[in-house]
Length: 224
Image (cartoon, rainbow, N blue to C red):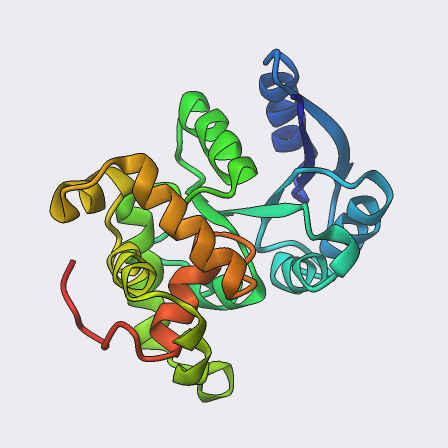
């Protein structure tokens, strides 16, 4: 299956570099380019990409608003957003997560990391790495948003095992690390994660992490 990618960045040179890189892969193709958030939303609705590679800081409508619009559109439920950011200084990470972003990638990433990130987010499997997960968690806890709180009762639809796996995923552990701790296979962990996502209507693992913290399943400051 070919992964269809939409590029959203105000720098034409950077979009061009991404296009060359992605179109050179047998399992990917660029279906459009947007120079700002408004255009990204319009093109997403027109082309229905699997992944939108989204810059945050763009003139006019920025990537945060575009991410919220895309992730909030039921007709784009199959589209995931991969945010380009710098974890050390980017104060918008938590906002992007709440908006529905499925992954985060530093702009200093090498080409192989970018391609792997696109495939990972397209699969809806996880945040890009434990380090990325922890960076998002730090931002989320540092800037709590009471309006985004999730009722704890929402987790009642989960089994005890699904809640356990969800809590460990929220601390930044990979499926392999969770499997090691639980003495099960990574496939079993993946099944639990996907069932939890389905029951909670989470688009991807990133949103599952947000729900875990916002519902109180994982207390602030809990170590991985």
